[in-house]
Length: 75
Image (tube, rainbow, N blue to C red; front, side, top):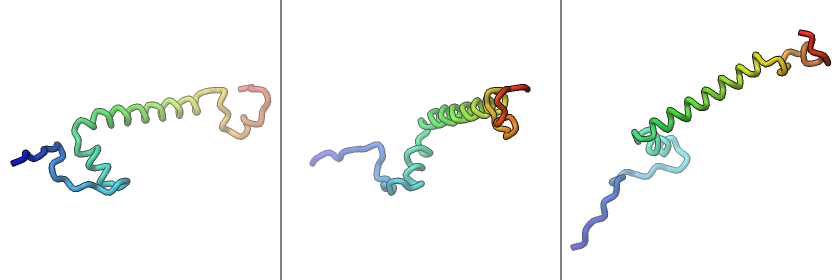
């Protein structure tokens, strides 16, 4: 009698590619993925914070229309 092959996934149904269920199976059900998601969320948030801070505080960035049209910086 041949031995049955054991897998880690068991008999879980395969999710349709590109669906939320596939994301849920691959990322949310795996506890080892939580640190990876935490690092990615922190990195995206930090990059967004730095970009926003640079856009709002850097004198070389001219978002205001009155400052954008001036040739010389007089502020």
